Length: 447
Ligand code: ACO
Image 1 (spheres, helix red, strand yellow):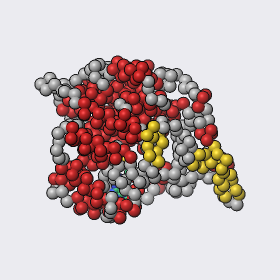
Image 2 (cartoon, helix red, strand yellow):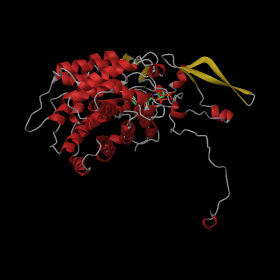
Image 3 (cartoon, helix red, strand yellow):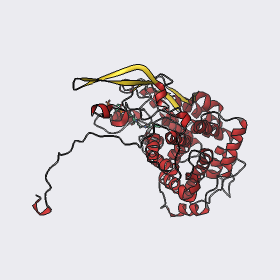
Image 4 (spheres, helix red, strand yellow):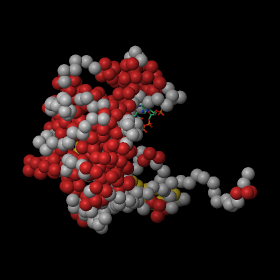
């Protein structure tokens, strides 16, 4: 791989935000003064980058609840007020006015595309949509019912073998790299679904938009040609936009951490896909539908499930509720809830028993003291599964859909990390709590 280069214009990005304010720490009777950083939206941080060198102390922060791992100019979110902006634009405006491809361009490049930039980017997406034919054989050798997320991460990881030129100038060629990856991951996702059904692969079409092309590869059949429905395309665009980035969440932090060892984009994204798979993260959308189906099948008594969720001796959690950062509401869930009604109406689905149960659960939860006291609101996953179901996307593909949406964010963060002059390999400290040094015991003397 070629040598990576620091982008001088961004040098000391975080250092540009050091304020006049100071923090003091008193340790062993000595006072240490630490800088305070205030971000462009007023977020405050105590800069402890010199703490261990100066004091010998580290900080402990399980789950990184209070730790900022980097400066970033991609996404701003305010969990208390329920605000989410990509590159300074409100999520509501982007979701209501843009295509997913425009938002992907925005995240990767930092500004909304002009008409000609968008046309060029879309052309690249069309050009790169095919997979190397040798890669297609891989799909034949996964056992039946393999989880699509494991297929997706394996195939994305193997992209660097087929397209090694994509790893050579990662930052300079970000246009090509992001278009290739966005385009190929869509083909991989659709092919993995077709293979799981034992149906023939449907190749990408140059004349279709990003989302229409994906839907066509998923659902077209030699015996029943797929007719692109613009309401379905619009809903898919919206869902992908809502998932496109979410600052330092588990999968994005994984992409950054893996990439910080200077590993290529594909390996880093593959690691992010695996992190997203977890039921506490992206896997929650599938788990929500499973939970709603179980409630419906067992007669609709959702109160039993709410009681289980509130029982501290029961590990069950009400999936689709709660968020590490949002403590008032998740702005994405409001947009999705409205989109859910529109999609069902556009598709002529007059009622959906799972949607009815979901609405009732939400209403009860929002006035239940257990959930209110813990600031547990519906998150983005609570309604997204219902829309995916209405679009004909099977449960086991929901998290793959999330990965398709999150890809531009992962690419943008990987690039930002790669370019960051403050970059260091990610390597947290720990506090050791095991035995202190003890004499070695030869095997025949051990009891
Ligand atoms: N159901 C019941 N109780 C809950 C739930 C829930 N969904 N979520 C949190 N709680 C309770 C916890 O038991 C805890 O209660 P306690 O204070 O009495 O011990 C309290 O709320 C705080 O919970 P934490 O686990 O400390 O919150 P954390 O920020 O670590 O977790 C998470 C956030 C993982 C999202 C959690 O709310 C959860 O498990 N939700 C269900 C899974 C889910 O929907 N995940 C999708 C998240 S969105 C996304 O990744 C795209």
